[in-house]
Length: 146
Image 1 (cartoon, rainbow, N blue to C red):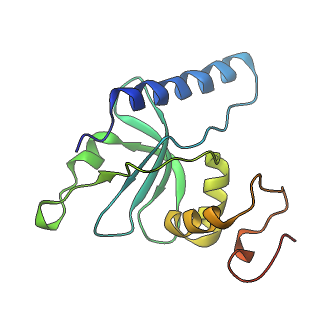
Image 2: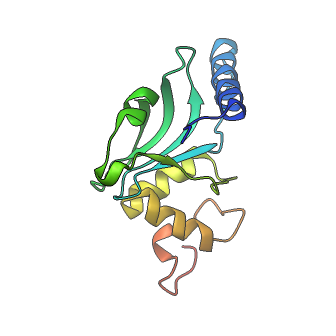
Protein backbone atom coordinates (compact mmCIF):
# COMPACT_ATOMS: atom_id res chain seq x y z
CA UNK A 1 0.00 0.00 0.00
CA UNK A 2 1.17 3.51 -0.76
CA UNK A 3 1.10 5.27 2.60
CA UNK A 4 0.70 8.80 1.19
CA UNK A 5 -1.08 9.66 -2.03
CA UNK A 6 -0.32 12.96 -3.82
CA UNK A 7 -3.43 14.63 -2.35
CA UNK A 8 -2.28 13.71 1.17
CA UNK A 9 1.21 15.09 0.52
CA UNK A 10 -0.20 18.38 -0.77
CA UNK A 11 -2.59 18.81 2.18
CA UNK A 12 0.03 17.85 4.79
CA UNK A 13 2.58 20.23 3.25
CA UNK A 14 -0.06 23.00 3.23
CA UNK A 15 -0.55 22.49 6.98
CA UNK A 16 3.22 22.77 7.50
CA UNK A 17 3.32 25.98 5.46
CA UNK A 18 0.37 27.44 7.42
CA UNK A 19 2.05 26.70 10.75
CA UNK A 20 5.36 28.20 9.63
CA UNK A 21 3.63 31.32 8.27
CA UNK A 22 1.79 31.79 11.57
CA UNK A 23 5.07 31.44 13.47
CA UNK A 24 6.84 33.95 11.21
CA UNK A 25 4.03 36.47 11.58
CA UNK A 26 3.69 36.00 15.33
CA UNK A 27 0.16 34.65 15.01
CA UNK A 28 -1.33 31.72 16.89
CA UNK A 29 -0.41 28.46 15.21
CA UNK A 30 -3.23 26.53 13.53
CA UNK A 31 -4.65 23.44 15.23
CA UNK A 32 -5.58 21.27 12.23
CA UNK A 33 -7.43 17.99 12.25
CA UNK A 34 -5.32 14.95 11.38
CA UNK A 35 -5.50 14.14 7.68
CA UNK A 36 -4.02 10.64 7.69
CA UNK A 37 -4.13 7.70 10.09
CA UNK A 38 -1.57 4.88 9.95
CA UNK A 39 -1.99 1.71 12.00
CA UNK A 40 -0.44 -1.64 12.74
CA UNK A 41 -2.96 -4.28 11.58
CA UNK A 42 -1.56 -6.71 14.19
CA UNK A 43 -1.21 -4.39 17.16
CA UNK A 44 -2.09 -1.14 18.84
CA UNK A 45 0.43 1.21 17.17
CA UNK A 46 -1.37 4.15 15.56
CA UNK A 47 -0.22 7.46 14.10
CA UNK A 48 -2.37 10.52 13.28
CA UNK A 49 -0.64 12.90 10.87
CA UNK A 50 -1.18 16.63 10.39
CA UNK A 51 2.02 17.78 8.65
CA UNK A 52 4.76 16.68 6.25
CA UNK A 53 8.03 18.61 6.34
CA UNK A 54 10.01 19.75 3.30
CA UNK A 55 12.33 16.74 3.54
CA UNK A 56 9.41 14.54 2.43
CA UNK A 57 10.04 12.20 5.36
CA UNK A 58 9.39 13.97 8.67
CA UNK A 59 5.76 13.83 9.70
CA UNK A 60 4.18 15.69 12.60
CA UNK A 61 1.25 14.35 14.54
CA UNK A 62 0.20 12.09 17.36
CA UNK A 63 2.04 8.79 17.78
CA UNK A 64 0.79 5.92 19.91
CA UNK A 65 2.99 2.83 19.98
CA UNK A 66 0.60 1.00 22.27
CA UNK A 67 2.33 1.60 25.61
CA UNK A 68 -0.35 3.89 27.07
CA UNK A 69 1.38 7.21 26.44
CA UNK A 70 0.49 8.80 23.08
CA UNK A 71 2.73 11.77 22.23
CA UNK A 72 2.71 14.70 19.84
CA UNK A 73 5.89 14.98 17.84
CA UNK A 74 7.80 14.15 14.69
CA UNK A 75 8.25 10.70 13.21
CA UNK A 76 9.69 9.28 10.00
CA UNK A 77 7.58 8.16 7.06
CA UNK A 78 10.48 6.02 5.81
CA UNK A 79 10.79 4.25 9.17
CA UNK A 80 7.05 3.56 9.29
CA UNK A 81 7.12 2.26 5.70
CA UNK A 82 10.11 0.02 6.54
CA UNK A 83 8.32 -1.83 9.36
CA UNK A 84 7.83 -5.50 8.48
CA UNK A 85 5.24 -7.48 10.40
CA UNK A 86 4.57 -11.22 10.48
CA UNK A 87 2.80 -12.84 7.51
CA UNK A 88 4.16 -10.18 5.13
CA UNK A 89 2.00 -7.42 6.61
CA UNK A 90 3.07 -3.80 6.89
CA UNK A 91 1.81 -0.61 8.47
CA UNK A 92 -1.35 0.52 6.66
CA UNK A 93 -3.22 3.74 6.05
CA UNK A 94 -6.80 3.76 7.30
CA UNK A 95 -8.67 4.42 4.05
CA UNK A 96 -11.89 5.29 5.89
CA UNK A 97 -10.32 7.75 8.35
CA UNK A 98 -11.83 11.22 8.32
CA UNK A 99 -11.72 13.63 11.23
CA UNK A 100 -12.87 17.17 11.86
CA UNK A 101 -11.47 17.06 15.40
CA UNK A 102 -8.28 19.07 15.94
CA UNK A 103 -5.01 17.37 16.80
CA UNK A 104 -4.96 19.05 20.22
CA UNK A 105 -8.31 17.44 21.12
CA UNK A 106 -7.08 14.08 19.78
CA UNK A 107 -3.95 14.46 21.88
CA UNK A 108 -5.82 15.33 25.07
CA UNK A 109 -8.33 12.52 24.69
CA UNK A 110 -5.65 9.99 23.72
CA UNK A 111 -3.54 10.85 26.75
CA UNK A 112 -6.52 10.70 29.11
CA UNK A 113 -7.79 7.39 27.74
CA UNK A 114 -4.35 5.87 27.18
CA UNK A 115 -4.60 5.31 23.42
CA UNK A 116 -5.67 6.77 20.10
CA UNK A 117 -7.91 3.75 19.54
CA UNK A 118 -9.87 4.33 22.76
CA UNK A 119 -10.00 8.08 22.12
CA UNK A 120 -11.42 7.45 18.64
CA UNK A 121 -14.25 5.37 20.09
CA UNK A 122 -15.05 8.01 22.71
CA UNK A 123 -14.87 10.88 20.22
CA UNK A 124 -17.37 9.06 18.01
CA UNK A 125 -19.83 9.10 20.94
CA UNK A 126 -19.16 12.67 22.06
CA UNK A 127 -21.43 15.63 21.37
CA UNK A 128 -20.14 18.02 18.70
CA UNK A 129 -18.93 20.66 19.07
CA UNK A 130 -17.30 19.67 22.33
CA UNK A 131 -17.83 22.07 25.23
CA UNK A 132 -14.57 23.32 26.79
CA UNK A 133 -15.29 21.53 30.08
CA UNK A 134 -16.18 18.20 28.51
CA UNK A 135 -14.63 15.20 30.26
CA UNK A 136 -13.86 12.29 27.89
CA UNK A 137 -13.73 9.92 30.86
CA UNK A 138 -17.47 10.36 31.28
CA UNK A 139 -18.32 9.00 27.81
CA UNK A 140 -19.81 5.53 28.00
CA UNK A 141 -20.07 5.70 31.80
CA UNK A 142 -23.50 7.31 31.95
CA UNK A 143 -21.89 10.64 32.79
CA UNK A 144 -22.17 14.09 31.42
CA UNK A 145 -19.98 17.15 31.12
CA UNK A 146 -18.53 18.41 34.42
